[in-house]
Image 1: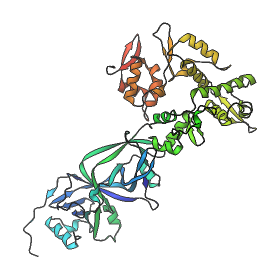
Image 2: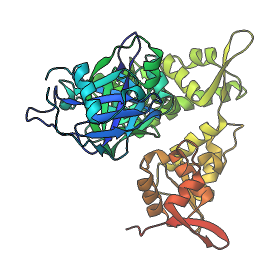
Image 3: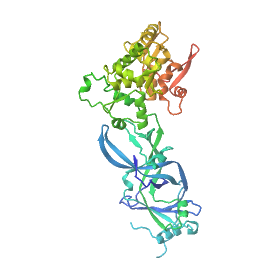
Image 4: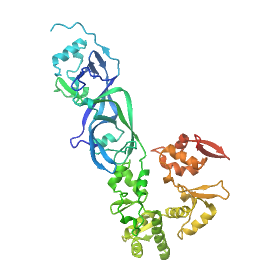
Length: 112
Length: 392
């Protein structure tokens, strides 16, 4: 695994949600919206996904993660073709949403 | 789909009955990036030190052939890799800011469109492991070096390995591999790492010990220069120097001359192996007599020099001794214990320790291993260990 060259590694953030992610549209996930992520003035993350509000907390990871991207087979050696992985980013922070989502009760939409 | 606008974000806040005054002005609109579902990204949980290594620009390598469990190697350590499942969904998001970062950056724009790069419900976990070095010896034993006169080396064989070859085949870090090569007295011949064939190694050692004897040198002051002069016609100079390095400690005196302090224990041990490999077992007292006569003048042959090489059977009448080399035993903990208990049902701690010492992980003791893999009992007032399960 090699880290991306000079300039240092990007820092990404992990968002941890309960349950599974499913595409709402038939076209699959790519490009589709997940939701809006806000923070309160006290720094509490608030995620609005569909008809749910999720409250979470910012957690500094004791054991950071490296994000590995597969780069396909390298040159063959005595052990056979090597799979190369590149470290694209490091993750030292996660937003953990563990509380049960509060459903948003929608009113009758106002006229535009 | 189109990107969300401020108006849409505010409308959602209103529907959700959240008060914008209680929120930071910036909002991240999260959407799935084009490659998010492709599964090309995965997460690796880093043990202490590895994060710093990556940030310093150093590489980590994952090693393992199809039939091996993957091992991650840094420059000097090895880790087992295991998938850990979580019941949660982990989304990895580039460019997502924390509240601190947003507060610090007054100019942060209102809407941050963040694309989720990927997601997963599992990640790789690392656990520091013993480097898998048994294979190193196995590879080098495929074609041991028998000396320059051997016809074997003239034929082209592919069982020869360079440092790069070994790095790609052995599940260990480079430092661990280079260290092990030194421990097993491997040497580089024409760019390939080789182990000496035992008979050839003994032949070389014998040249040296005979020379020491005929010159009446002190065992702690064997001159390299004279060895090369006297023995250079019999064997390649590199081999003479190699055998001196394997069985002695090199030092340089004030005049700049190179000398070797010979390892009495290692020499006696090698001679014992030479004697023991010729039969299944030996009468202990006969063996000890022959062995003492075979070692160089001035050296004392002692049974404690044979730890991990030979085992004494004190229950047979007369007592016997036989060859049992720890490096011939399985590398896996459970398999090692199974193997030892099939050789002998009950072991004392003193007898078994040399055969399990190398299994100890960082900070693990022999006692801890025995507690885990064996059961203890008392026999004639002595504590002995036997298998936890029936051995077929």
